Length: 590
Image 1 (cartoon, rainbow, N blue to C red):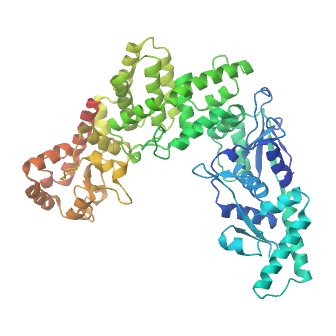
Image 2: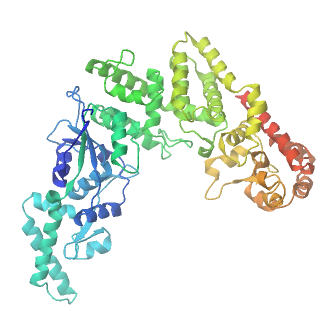
């Protein structure tokens, strides 16, 4: 049998939480948004008081070859300069306990600070989330952290007497009977039962050896947790960044936070709420020419990616390169120019981006073009436009996308100059967007049911690029797709050219949702058309808008002239080809 990679050392709540406060156990979640509701914290404390299990915590021994660099994480003014163990699983539970017992502030979803206040009724042994009514009710201790604080300051008896006095005065004001001796005894028992959680409630702990790599760690995690949740590279990378490079971690998280909300001089954009993994992927791809996220963890551990040797000196070198690349990745001018380029490629709405990884990976390609090959200005924008359009349309970065990106970066490494890069870029795009793709593959995509997916979004993007107007309307598809134009109800509908109810129940019912049977239309116009057959509603619209508008609508929406009189299967065959050719025409504009 292989030597075990873990040890089972159970700890009391007080011991484990105390280790977090002292800095022996690193808890990065104290610096990240706390996603639990106060009611979740209340339920956690209630489970503990009732003696119910609350699950394992998994700790990972800190690597022992970089002691001089490690820094404390979570709280300031700790006894330990660096954590000896890192919390891998159970971070939210431990954060809840640290906040509830020590009154430590947590970060909310907007990265603001807040206190978790859980009230406690020592007579009924009940917890309650804090609110104004609880604050006025003398039965409750409004914040359990005050009880634990009194214990740490050796004034539990004073705290208990003050509570009894306050409750007695409240009863007197309300005309209720004074507390009996048995009730005062119940209060003492209830407070003691709460305080005893620190010493009597035991949390099962698995401590994983620092010899375990991330795959072994994930396997341990999966086999301990019946849900089969897999630890992500993000879990490892952000935990290690918190230990070894907290300032770098903070820069990344600040950038991600700023992507949520519009503001001057921020990373906000309408296409993507940026995650740390997006930033790290772009940085490792651009700065190290590596396409797999796991290389970031190896960099943090001081791995020479060529010789595969690990050392402190190499770690310092890696981080210098990482931070240099990060500076360029976080350059706001480049970032917003890139986002604008994606908009020029027709992708103006987050719902159109079927693969969020395509954004950071294309960004890395653009940064390589700029900083390694000196491509700038409109040509650089063109690199981003064309590559992203191709990547989304062909689903380049779905499935085993890390291997694809790795192969691309390996190919770029050997290119001698900008001309070679241009040839490579054209060859890569040309190998995917071939004549067969536009004549066979893409039309076949439009023969499938449901107006969704990369091919449909590519058609909408193409209409944006070409400035197409919505069918029988003056507004453009771009205007209707813009995020600001949509509230709870989208500004446009996916209109069935041959209406759904018109086809339903007939011989073509099974293909009524074919992608080639859809067109973007103002939802008001869609309501107006209702279930009328094409021969009926088109006649009305031609009379209303005129023949020139009808012909323009057909061209701009890839509809064959006279479609309203065509048999449905014939219409689909023709329109599938027209849609694909419209996409090809738009790509030529990029």
